[in-house]
Length: 79
Image 1 (cartoon, rainbow, N blue to C red):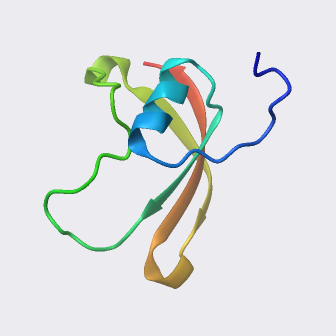
Image 2: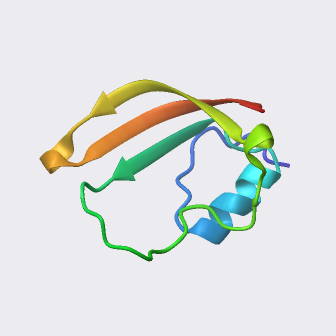
Image 3: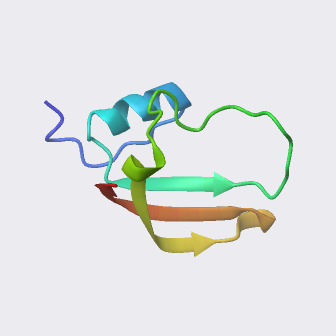
């Protein structure tokens, strides 16, 4: 029972995917580094949603720490 949990930080793509699939995520905080590096580590693993079922994020705060982009968003719906 996770009803008492109000705030937690999820690190790692597999763990984030598990929490998203379970419907336990209300807010996402995403960092975007302003670099193109080619192949990288998946931010969220195990969802593999088609575009029509993609999770809808609504940004409510955007900042530029150190030249990167930090976006806080509410999770609104599943497509």
